[in-house]
Image (cartoon, rainbow, N blue to C red; front, side, top):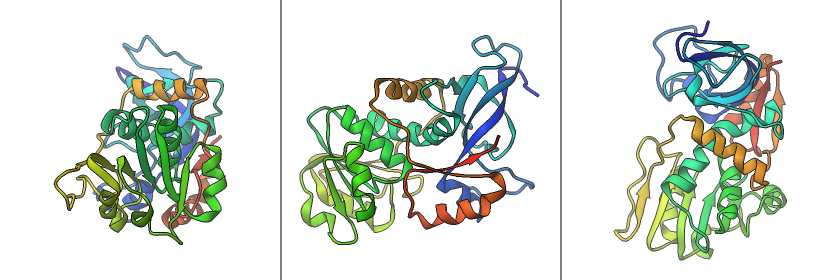
Length: 284
């Protein structure tokens, strides 16, 4: 049932995110009430409209990300604030839209809103083959930046196709030995990779982190800035995803599909962190 300001969406596809298995294991946002439905981003069709909602109607194809503190996309239906979903473009399937929702939102908040990457700058993006990083590579390239990224050798062709200028095999090369004087760095990996990312920055450079907890790691030098992007929920950022796809600046991510009944298998792959693009549940 859609309450005031909400819509109910019949979910067609829902994305798997690293946060999902962390919540399941109690490593993030420990749960006190059960049963609990995981899942943060989705694409589907509006099936009910609450009071006061005038810009969406039954039958609209939409995609979105659950509000902060809300989950529940691993399901056939979800009630959500109308103001934080957006109409899906015909250029994207529901599976593609679900895959791009939280990944794109996070990348835009990091690359455009937080790092404010500009044409002519050089950025290092850690873990380029992942969902957020794949979007970030394309977005930074679209903005006119030179993009360096790290990935295993098996993902180099994929990253060249989406616009990376230089790709470093992290299994064979220490990025701190071959990258220097970057204007910006964006870390999606965490751990010691995050801390070592400060090494590649020029004086006055800035780095953004999404895999190091709620706070950015503290730099070991005083001439750079460490930032933790704030990833809010609003229609404007989702419409930015749609616009970037329409421009051809961002292409749909590489996707592996599962049924909801295969959630265990999907989470095992997600936990391994060794996959390309996104994992998505085909709900209907």
